[in-house]
Amino acid sequence: MKCEKVKKKTSIGGQALIEGIMMRGPEKTAMAVRNPEGEIVIESFPTAGKGRPRLFKLPFIRGVFNFVDSMSIGYRCLMRSAEIAGMEEESKDKKAPAAEAAVGEDNQENQPKAAEDKNIGMTIILILSVLLGTVLAVGLFITLPAFLFNLLRKLIPALDNNIWRAVVEGLTRILLFILYLIAVSMMKDIKRVFMYHGAEHKTIFCYEKGEELTVENVRRQSRFHPRCGTSFMVFMLIIGIVVSIFITAQNPFMRTGLKLLAIPVVVSVGYEMIKLAGKSENRIVRALSMPGIWIQRITTREPTDDMIEVAITAFGEVVPDNQELDKY
Image 1 (cartoon, helix red, strand yellow):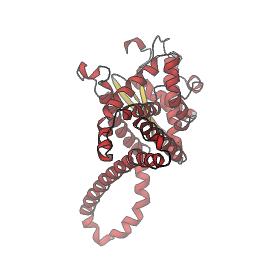
Image 2 (cartoon, rainbow, N blue to C red):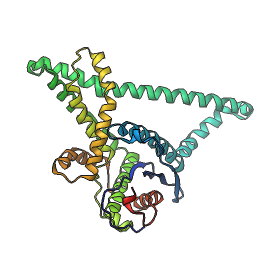
Image 3 (cartoon, rainbow, N blue to C red):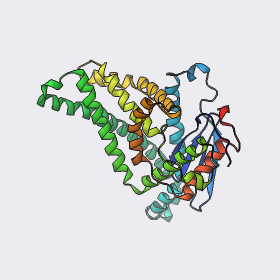
Image 4 (cartoon, helix red, strand yellow):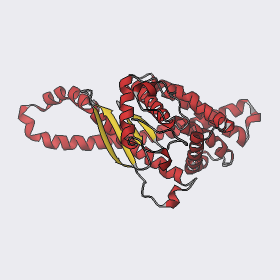
């Protein structure tokens, strides 16, 4: 795929999937996933929110809607990539012998009802998992930092003010976030996802520089991109510190509730900052982007050539050959 020299940054975004990559443009979203046979499977669809009224695309309003769209389509593509990559079939194959032995030939007529009961059971488990994950997230990133601050202010009474509370709790969340990323990066499957993440960044960089999208050209690019979702999360954590300074409620339940209500504000500001970081060479903006770039050393890895091929394929579906960037 050959690209014309560009004058401004692309609005193409992406997400690493299981054995694949999703690329999202203003008009079209596409995912490319390598199946167990080594073939690249491509699926594409219109980008969510394309026909949304202009009001919802205004600065500090668009961020929340784009965040919800990204979470929704990202989850769908992730689940679909698991199917294409054969992970669900592999899981079923491992469970099949035990299931067949338990059912027996004389109970085969009851298999449809058993399957229906199993689906209901899996739905209940999924709902409970989401609820448990939400409870753990609130406990880990809101309750635990508050608990640690309360212990610390007893040891150092001078910290007993709202500014120090916001700073200490915010830095604790950032530390927990980094430790979480380090922990999951040690998992074999997650390492491969992080490698695809690197391929996504390199491909977008190659296009932004107006170079032909070849494996060789993409391989030479940096795997650290200022518009990365990792950087977005870091921006939100930092903005959360500032917002917390203005939350003066002392009741822990009320304070937690106000923080949750402030999430749309944090998301909106974080989105505008990440957009600015992607198109500005200002030194201050670049300095603000550095923490996110540093953490990308955890969430991205150098990809293999076959991973780069998948990224180029997904990108080619979103931006056809010789598509001029100024149209975006």
